[in-house]
Length: 71
Image 1 (cartoon, one colour):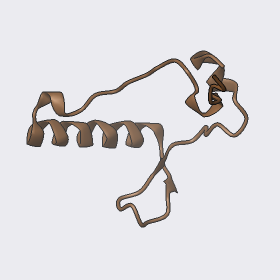
Image 2 (cartoon, rainbow, N blue to C red; image 1 turned 180 degrees about the vertical axis):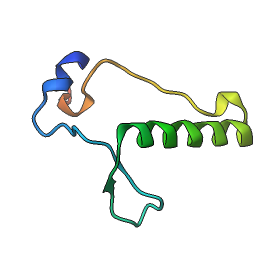
Image 3 (spheres, rainbow, N blue to C red; image 1 turned 135 degrees about the vertical axis):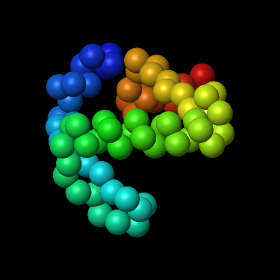
Image 4 (tube, one colour; image 1 turned 120 degrees about the vertical axis):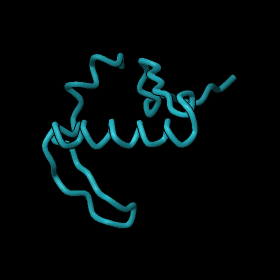
């Protein structure tokens, strides 16, 4: 599966969810709030630990579909 095919995958979330603490239940939120909160968290991490403390990696591959090699 290619990365662009993930947009039409069954079970893919179509609404952002957010929580304040890991032990809390996720709550639906707006895209604006989700993106603003994410940006604030990234900026806080970078202020505390430096600009290189946060990165995003996209492989373009759905790793959940990989199978182990039998060789």
